[in-house]
Image (cartoon, rainbow, N blue to C red; front, side, top):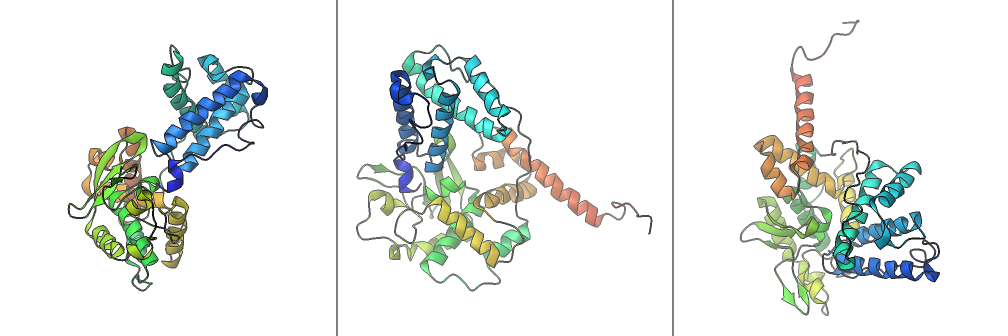
Length: 347
């Protein structure tokens, strides 16, 4: 993760007193804010949640306060949670956003309940509206090869170009999430208060990754990913500042300013490469994760293995790729089978 993820951003006035009616004059609500910030600090510093996620959770919890401005969070019941969720739904909040908000509330109370002596988590039994399952947007095999083989572009020459190719090869080779990619270290490091959670081992051709919920998994690194990483590590020192802290010294991927690369830079660089490669669609890091899963499932037909490599806690999350695989097969059938298409009136 980028250095910013290890210390949570301080709430602005808009996050606190202005967003929570009466917060500045209510001791219970002020105490709630202190507990919220303590929890967010733990997420950022200890569990290494991204700044984006921490900021979203802050908004979600202050939203819950606004729904019940006269009550402390410890006093909320399941009925209060349902009422707050229903109010957001009536305001037009979409099911996916409601599910994320409810997840933030549930996670906070899981952390808070033992401290406050609450008998239960008031958000535990509440369910968000069902989310329509849309198919992930994956590249075809030809599109993935066009992106990474760069047939329309010269081979990578500069440190930044070599870094980018290493990042994208790793994304496609191992199916990492964006946050997992930027959190990789080039080797395990424990010094100056810093301890690695994710790193690559080129000799073993694998990466150890700490993913969602602090779960650690091992993922393979393919031949092209290892070669790209070796090319990048050979020039990585050109972007590493002389006076770097432990987090920066450990970081596998560095930005142009010599710090651990930010997720936004990865997104922009991949989007630019997709345009240069002439792909007719927007390419983002999760596209490569989806492509990894889809292409592996098409070849291996091992759903459990794909679940393990992706780090999915529930196999139902992985099963969506079987629908994508069937869609691919159906398209091939429509193109190849002589009786797949209906005749038109003009034929």
